[in-house]
Image (cartoon, rainbow, N blue to C red; front, top):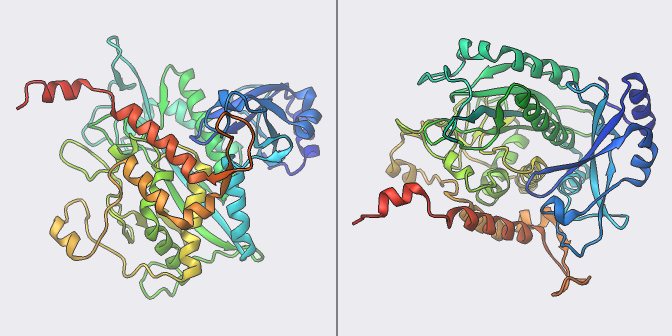
Length: 464
């Protein structure tokens, strides 16, 4: 389906595809999507007046119960036919309050950061690889891989496991192609019950919108087959975690030329000096950046080096290299860089904003990342890592949030947001968005880690 540009394009698609209802949605700070179902005959009002939500009820969007409604003004470019539900379409909007853009809106934050890059002549483009697992519960209420036969110790690319999910996976692939996203591969990943569908690149806003719809689509179709599709970073201790890899590049705003491509790269990675500057920027801000792209307590159970009992393919050190999956930044294809740190437990809008802001700081300061690293960082001795001056990624959400609060570049990128008075009344005060975000994440950290688990009981009850 060709991407619509205007409301008139949307009306034409509604008529051509006999659309009866439209989900009008937005995402809050932690990545949760909220929506209202709007009859298609209300399309004019939908795009001119928007649709209202009680923001406080929807999630973290900078509102209290006393706050006025948020209004969602849909973007016609996000209009998509829902392939598996006849007569249904989906559209994503920006959050406004009393007719003005709402500074807490993740989509608006990304648009603002993209505008800054475009003023310098750059368009930020990404593709994503979203890993997910198909799971359900057994009779005792314990989480398990949905396919009981998917239990091999090395299941990656297993043709039999992929065949058992053939109908679901081929439907997803077809729908991705129908949506115009050019799916080029589907595979069974390294984890039992784990799959990945690759989606080609577009500009950052379009890719974030695609990611939100993709997550909704995978969830919905898995439920049709009696399964749960989880993007949780680490649902099982002894199974590989789920990543959401970013493949990034900067393009010329006028010529649409990939500015990261340099086939004469003296380092042999086909990456331009601009690309290396961008890499260096992300490495420079990696600790605070991680709070946005690995945004839950569970994220840091995925960001661990592999052992005999805990499988993983994720970075643990702040490094870059060539086609080496133990590096944070992997350059495996010409003219693009892949960050293997992110997962899909939060907002892609905020994650993309952090990546662009960090990378552009490297561009503006002409930072050099040094020579690529070619070690296996999972087995390299600690003494050697220390000798080379390699720094490690944060070990917990609390640690990454601490570094986020200290990162002036990211503080500026995410901007200021309004705050209410001490009793919820309007005020002229503002605070940094990252401070608001950090409070949410500290509360989440304590909500999870303050609970005494059965594992702690078994380990510490009679100790020492």
